[in-house]
Structure formats: structure tokens, C-alpha cells
Length: 220
Image 1: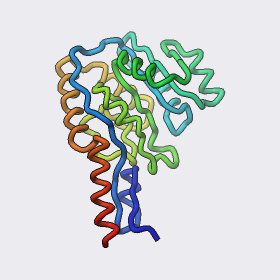
Image 2: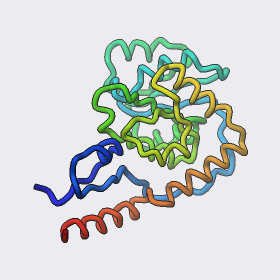
Image 3: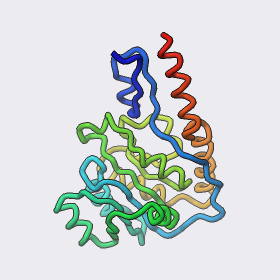
Image 4: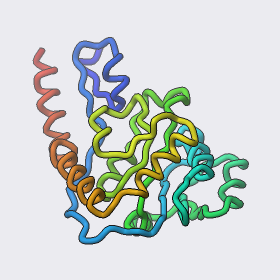
């Protein structure tokens, strides 16, 4: 048997019947500086796979409940069903860009006002998953509207705009709250995100945690 097990999913870490285990979800390479200005583009960006586990259909449903005027959803990714692709092509205020390279994705994130992670907790298997895009999103120091699936550590609740449930209305409310943030509130959130990232989510810190844990685990 193994000396220990590393879990990306917080739910799996809590429930796995093993003695030596470590929760280590992901990391970022650097903590960016605070933004000088705040983008008010009314653009919501989703990047990722377009299957049901990623929540694209939930997001498209939620867009029909968003109360903030002038909101546009930009979607990046591939792998959607024929029905999903049809919705992306025909829904008003939705722009589908397909797969893009890293530089383009970075530019889109800079132009967006809010980043969306609609991964639904009720889809089988998602409790074992940590949505790595969360840290990618947070490294932009922008509001992230997200579901809080079981695989996500409770630590994230203070640095994201969490949906109250997996319903379209619940996610729409999270988007509206993110879009309604004042400049002062956005700056305070950016500062909180920077503290969160610097406090343990740098890859250098995560690597150190793993090596320290592995050293103790292999000796026990």
C-alpha cells in the first residue's frame, strides 16, 4: 500500500478512510500587484470545458435571470453537446470564441469584469473534483462568481462571490452581487485575494508543504 495519499478535492480529503493524507489543491506562480483601475466592461468570462460537469448549461440558464443591465457573457472552451453549442450560437448577449491560446485567455481575463465558475455540486463525480480554474481566476484579482462544490475548501468562501445553490437563479444572484461591487469593495476584495494567495497558495509554498508532509509520512 501507499505511505500516504494527496487529495485535490477537499471532500475526498475529509472522507477518505486513510491515515496519512494531505489536502493540496493547486497553486499560482506569483501574486500579482493590486490593479490601478477596475474594469467596468460588464463582461462575464467563462473559460473551460463545455460539458455538464463544468456547468456551462447552468451558466447559460443563469444569464436569463441576471438583473444587471448590459451584461455580456464571453465563453472560451470546447467539448459541448450539440444542444449546448446551439445555445451558444443563438443566445443574445453571449459570445462564443472556441478554444484560445494562453495569451488570448489572459487578455480576455483582463477585459472581463467578473469571472464565472458554475461547476454544479449536484452532478455525480464533482465532489471528487477541485476546479483548478478557481485559482487561475483569483490570480486576476477580480470578483469570481462561483458555486461552492464539496471539493472546494471552505477557505475560499471569503474571497469569492459564492452562489447560495446550484439553481440558475442562485448563480444569477452571485453574478449580480459581483457586478454590483463598488470600486472600494472591489479593491478590498483584491487585497483579500492577494493575502489569500500569498498565505499558502503559491506553488513554492505548496511544494514545501508536500515535501514536509512526504518526509514525515515516509518515516512513519
